[in-house]
Image 1 (cartoon, helix red, strand yellow):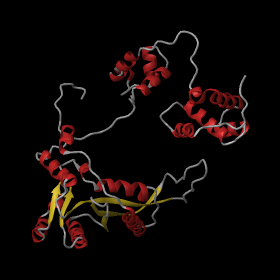
Image 2 (cartoon, one colour; image 1 turned 135 degrees about the vertical axis):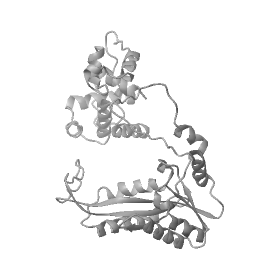
Image 3 (cartoon, one colour; image 1 turned 180 degrees about the horizontal axis):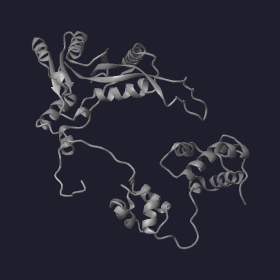
Image 4 (cartoon, one colour; image 1 turned 135 degrees about the horizontal axis):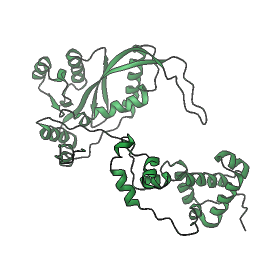
Length: 356
């Protein structure tokens, strides 16, 4: 006879597991729902209130509340189904998925429905197999090989600075984030509400651009910054003088990319007059080696992308305010991969497979 316990006793370990399940996007939706039911019951919510909160029927709440009371976490799994289990040829699904669809279908990749029809099985069966083996035919990543003839030497140089910085020297990563747009929406932002995210209009107004120059100190995460209207040799030279002034007595090793302004004759002449400053260049198509790019991603996500700016001055003020706050809470940027671990993954590999 089902248990009708009004207050469900949930041990701390079970609660931690249930809370993790209730927030997960990687487990079955049914298990997420059952975890939410049990947590609601443990928090003394009634059957009707739990059903309304979770979006299920009252009998469903009673079923899974009682199953947990009787069997614990194991009771939330699906019970074995009667009859002979279905036989699924997962090898055939995998083989078909990894081959391109027939040309007559006119598609670039399989969908669960197309592959299910092709193999004479349900699309749900295909979807389960794809989830099990982490196959996502609808996704495509990108890559780019560097053609820099000094690829290995530059990687070893930059990675060596990160892993074994020179004694009594500062390692900085410098770059510019150009064409940051001061965008304003055509209507006020609708603020976040329980159950609803913040909303903004799809269309926007452009109110100018700025370029952020930043120097990231690898050992501390501190950032020296300056915004300019342009990003030529004059601006890069002015910023480097600001960086030199911020570190007046230290030897500086500065990681930069291969943008032509970084190698301009005027910059080289200035470096000759300031021998304590040395530039270290990343390989071409190797900006991922420059740790300041990580910081650019952080400021974009946290301060720029969702901001609204009536003019460039507001944008520049927002950037400066964020960096001031960042420097109060900054942390070291730790590089972990050695050059020997990186190089096998960045060298172009010969292949005889025409599909590649």
